Length: 252
Length: 263
Image (spheres, rainbow over the protein chains, first blue to last red):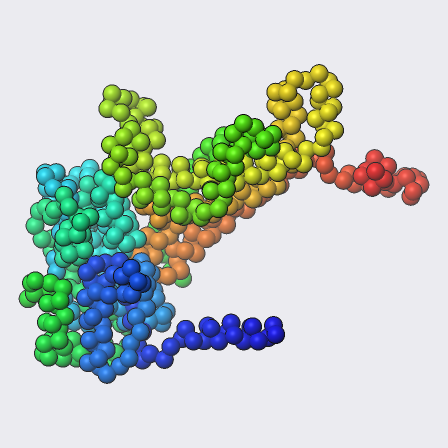
C-alpha cells in the first residue's frame, strides 16, 4: 500500500513535465502585456504574441509563469527556452542572453499624482521617492541618471502602483504603455497622470522589447526572428495589437 | 560562482545586515513587552485572558508574510488611515525628534516592525505561558510562606523561574524571528535578502545573491545559538544534573549523592 501511494505521488511529479516543444517564460503582473485573470489564467499581449509565434513556427508551447527578478536565471538554467515578457534589449542583458529583433517598442515615462507639479528632470526629481520594478531598465536608468532620487524597488509593477496610490512614492517610472493601460486607464489610476516627456537613453533603454534565448540557442533565435517577420506580414500581429492598443505598438 | 560581484556589493550587504539585526532585535524587544502581560494573563486566567488568547491565536495562526502584507499594502488602502496620525506625525511636532521616530504606517520600516513585533509577541507569549505553567508549585508556596505578597511572588519568584525554563525555546524564537525577517524584503526594505535579490537582479544570476544572503544568515544564527548556550549554561545551572565525582575512595553506592540520581 505504501509503495502504491509513493508510486502515485511520483506519477504526480511526472505528469507536470509535459511534452510541449518549447517552454516560454512569461511574467503575469505587467498588464496589459501579461496578467493573471481571476480564474488563474495568464493572458495579455505577450501571451498572445507568444502563442502566435509558436503557431507560426509550428510548435507546441507551454507558458511558464516566472518571477521577474529570476526570469533570466530561469532561462539560463533551462526552466524555459525563451522569455517573452516585455524584456527590453540592453547591452547589459546581452552579456547573459541573446535577443531576437524587437517585437514592440514603447518609451519610458513618469507617472505621479495629478497636479503634483513634478518635473521629470534629475534636478526636479531631487529628493523625491520613486518606485521602480527591481531588475528593470528603469532601475538602471534611475540609478544612472537620477542620483538624487530615493529609489524604492518592487518585485512587481503592480506593487509599485499600490504604493503610488498609498502615497509612499511620489512617482513611478516604467514603460508608458504598461502604465497607461495597466494603471492610468483603470479605476485604481484615477487621479494619477503622466508628467514630463518620453525618456529614451540608448545606453539604458535599447531598441525595444525582444525575446531572450540562451546564448548557444542560435537555431531558436533564428526561428523566432523568422516567426516575428511572418506574423508581421500575415497581419496576425496587427490583429493582436489592435485587441489591446489604439496606436502602433511596434514603433518605427 | 562569481566572487567579484559579491565583493563589489559588500557595502550593500553590510547595510542589509544592519537593517536585519536592527529590525529583529527591536521586534523581539517589543514582542517581549507585549508577551509579558499576555502570558501572565493567560496563565492566571486574568480578566482579559480571552482577548490575549484571541491575539495569540490569530498571530500564530496566520503566516508572517500575510500579516506584513495586510499591514503594509492592506491598511494603506483606507483613506481614513492615510488621513490619520497613523500615517504621519502631527504637523505641530514639526521637525522635532518625536516626528522623526513617529510610528508612521507610511514607512515600510515601521510596518515591518509592527508586523514582526505583533507576530513575535504572540509566539513569545506562548513560550512564556509554557514556562509559567511548569514552575513547580513548591516554589510559589515557598515564596508565599516567606510572606511575599502576590505581586512580589510574580516579580521575584514566578517570572524569573519561568523565564529561565523558557530560555531554550527563547533561543529558537530568536532564530525564527531572524529568519522570518526576510519578509521585510518584499515591502521594499533592503535587508540581507533584499541586498541578495538586488545583486541577482543586477547581474542576472541565480545563486550569488541568495548564497551570500544564506551565509550571512547562517553566521548570525550560529552567533545567536552560541550566545544562548552560554546564557543557558549560566542560568539553567541549577537544573543540570551535576557531574558525579568519583575521586578518592568513595563507595560506588554513594556516587549519586548530591546529584539527581538518588532523588
